[in-house]
Image (cartoon, rainbow, N blue to C red; front, side, top):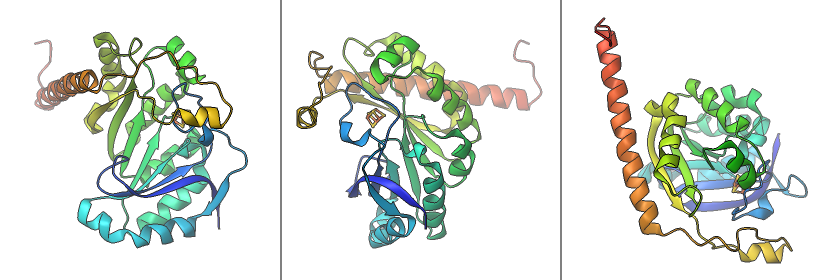
Amino acid sequence: MRTGKLHSIETMGLVDGPGIRTVFFLQGCPLKCQYCHNPDSQSFMGSNEITVEDVVQTARRYREYYQVTGGGVTFSGGEPLMQGAFLVEALAALKAEGISTCIDTSGYGQSHYYEAIFKLTDHLLVDIKHTRNDAHKVLTGRDMTGIRHFIKALRSFEGTITIRHVMVPGSTDRPEIMAELLAMIEPIQKKVDKIDILPYHKAGVEKYSQLNLSYTFESVPEMSPERAAEFERSINEALRASKERAAEVTVIEGNGYQLSA
Ligand code: SF4
């Protein structure tokens, strides 16, 4: 049976998808976000292995919690989409058990598996790190080619999507960045249930010294949770308005009228 590279498991996760979830954090990530809270999950080397059967057996133990809360299993990371073959088998085995599936991703994966993965996934958490190519590269070590390609691929995804953005003060805490974020997701907005704006914080920074790594965000202040909540409220209002406008256009077009008439 196929195995995956595992970083850790959280059995009763409350923040990685709907309801109570068992979260499998897979090992290895192609990004190197300067604020990453799990720098030990980035390397593709030297991890524990987990089989698809282990995933299913673990999930079965929490089935009642999923049923009561609308939860299920989430694959996070690291970057779960970098383990496409394992993910496809694990998702298929969970769906065969009637267990809801969710993936938390930054959109940098093995794209030839996307189509198969999308068919087996109910919910996606899509982390958008930045809206500007140069800043994205500085923040994550990669330009935006991967996330742009992923958003295009999401046009064929039929589940629901939550967008997540870690807001960094002095970098993305600006209305124009929020407008760019909305524009980026416009082609898939119909499937987006909400946008979570997560305030940058420094919890977990001690991991860097434990791993003998330098923390380049040392001088960046934490984001005020209240300000982040304010940005979150306004971007979700703008998202709702944009979806309503798009729905009106669809109705008008469906009735055979010209928009410009
Ligand atoms: S995508 Fe996630 S796991 Fe990967 S480096 Fe960024 S924060 Fe860390």
